[in-house]
Length: 449
Image (cartoon, rainbow, N blue to C red; front, top):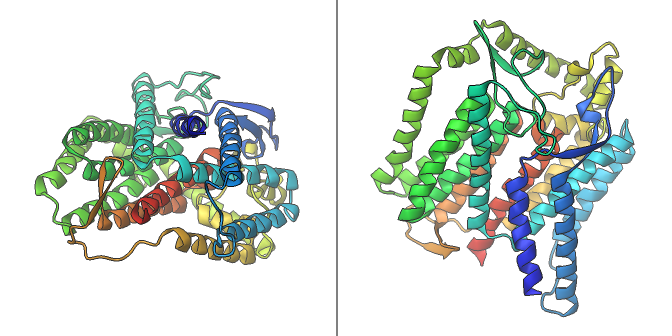
């Protein structure tokens, strides 16, 4: 069984590394006045890998239970009850949704997310997961640089990439005197790529402050490289999320009285990269921040109108919600004149949860999630300057640093959720949430082990 455990562990790292690949089989295309992405039923290649992982993990755990090598204390452990309650709540929501088939499809993604969370928590090693995320982000940055300078995303069905050029209507661009393509990597949208790179950079900063000399050099190289990738996405939400989280990390390091040179090095490196790109592409950055540019102005107006549309739907479905994954379906019912490209979720994942679940279910869900957090995050409070530390998997983790990990990752996730919808509306976003929570809980696990 030790061999099976190793297989599960390394397949887990492979899954995390391959997560940004959007290779999929579309077995039921969505159609509402045109192609409808949010109603499209797909099977992702990483879902197949995750299915194999889940099956192997169940075989391993059942064997361990039967041989009494591990035991489950259901009476004192409230975790199964919490998860059963969440599942029943979501099943009820699916049954009462406007389009039950679409709701159950979205529920399958949530079940997969719960599965990878537990697999990483049970079989993953924190340090390797960290580096796997960073390495996967570096591959995305390679695609990012190529796409930015060639101004083309090459179609590749094996990587799940569609053809994208600045002249195609509807493709995300920065428009001033010319149309400049925003980069995608292998992901469906520049903002989704930006969100992934932001999380990877937060992880990169964490490992930088927790690693030794040789590893610190490599972490700085990856930090600089992936930061270039984040800048080239021109994703405002992702850049804001990363900078807020970075401020939290640096503030804690200052409180811990970390060596000044250690703190200032990544700051100087980051500011140098920003200065180079501002000098070289100042027109693109100014356009992206412009209040008068037609494209940027239209983007803001569309987002504001989405809140108005969402408010109207909320007034009609505030109690039961429209159902998991059903928001754009409900939008089509309310506005039959809308074209397919108008059927977009409101750019706020928290509001989207409220719209799809309704007020009572949302309150119950958040209550259950708080219980879930309390179950795992039992980290004792200690003074910031205390020198207590634990070495785990080659990383020296200070007690305060653990809290910094929780705060920086959660704040990054919250910022992305407040400014966009893909964390709930896309398979990749749902799995990314599970991945972030698994990192938080791996830190808690190492704290309490």
